Length: 61
Image 1 (cartoon, helix red, strand yellow):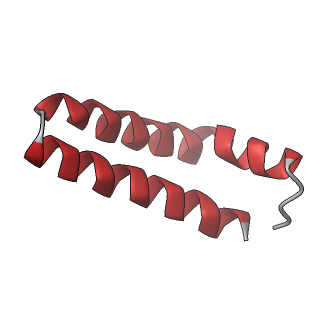
Image 2 (cartoon, rainbow, N blue to C red):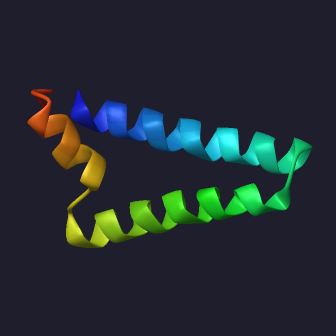
């Protein structure tokens, strides 16, 4: 369940930032870059902040 939530949040952030960049300012692409960098580092380190937060909130795997 946690993996699905993490993927949903990451996808939502990316799509939202792309829409905001298209209609308002290209500076919103920095949010896309941040999410992408976080996904990259979590694939290498096997640690994700959102995963830790969800675990403390009691969400099970």
